[in-house]
Image (cartoon, rainbow, N blue to C red; front, side):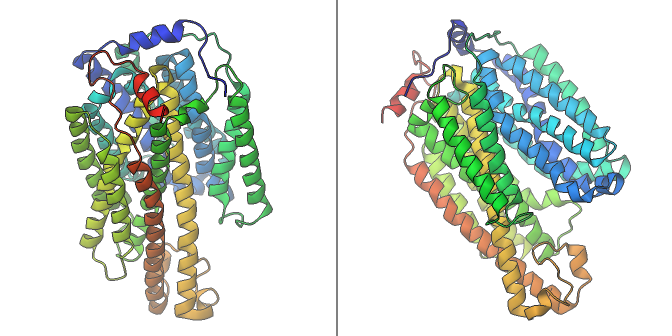
Length: 531
């Protein structure tokens, strides 16, 4: 396998400059801009999701509703690795600002949409910019703050995640009720302008211009592969059966494009995703862990509110509040772990503890039934959130510590991509398991009445309002069906979490950069890669 390299002296000069220490005041000022940008990225889907029924009522085209979300998700996932590589080659500040501008343009155009087709197209533009927001935040943080010191700041990002998850639906509902759905997109503009201004003024990074050619073929092949995978998880079991020619064709396209991508990446001067990174054991293992974390987290956030609304009778109005126990556990543990890593420089034990606690939380959640109290389910959610709190920031920290600074963008985008793809697979698999178990339980309890003459046309997609209109015996059967579906979903989730436990056990305790004087950026990477 040929070794990838960056042509010209610029990258080496850039690495040297980025290693120079920044003052705490300078870092804090930059962090404000990064936090606002991260909030911008995370809030969007949560706010827009709340307004979707109103948007459909205004624009029509309900048959295209899923594409409003799919277009954004596809563009975000496909562009994520490209943004990371462009940042490494041409400078993180410039590419980061560009992604913000594209996101804001897409937001403004989405708000101006006059029909569903326009909204879908403009959401794709918005997603294209969104792919660079999270990667930009993480890679810039990785360039400015040594891994050893990053725990001082990672709590800020955990807090933003919790705030977005809880506040997004609340803000979306308020805007939809008191303004109009257009403002669910326009709200991004003032936040984006603040983010742009803060980044322009406070972020000082050297300009970079690599003389190497962009790996266009690799970018196209990777985009086709990622797009195919996301479409498989989006359409499988929903629009098309898992064994349909459409899904099998997408699977074949994904396999062919990713195999071709691996072939191309070994032969270009500046690969879009250097495969040599995966020779580093720690980088590969945290990629696996990140995939599982995404798998579990996105699956949990989709199905836990459903259980709380259907079985426990919680209100859907403030749906973000339903996940507060999980977010609270995640936030507190993330803060504690971040400070501990900064103080000791040790991190290997935390992924091990986190994966075990995460699996335990999933097992506990699988025990929920129709009689489980809100307090009990909240406690189990805290356990799950605590497990993820050990992992959310640590996986990114280990990934970035495993590469040289010139590859910080690629490392950040790869970690983000694995988590995103894991989330897509988690929602798809959990959805299929849940729907099948709900349908089977309904048939067991009601026989043919569950699907014919009983008012339940789609057992896996019953809203609380629609359920309340049905006879009491059907409501009772559906409560048991949802509880059984949750048991299956979370038990399977616990089984998948075992993979993360195994990966965490094999992590090496490689010294974090910033832990001592005289350490070279590549030393940790080379040491782990040699094993």
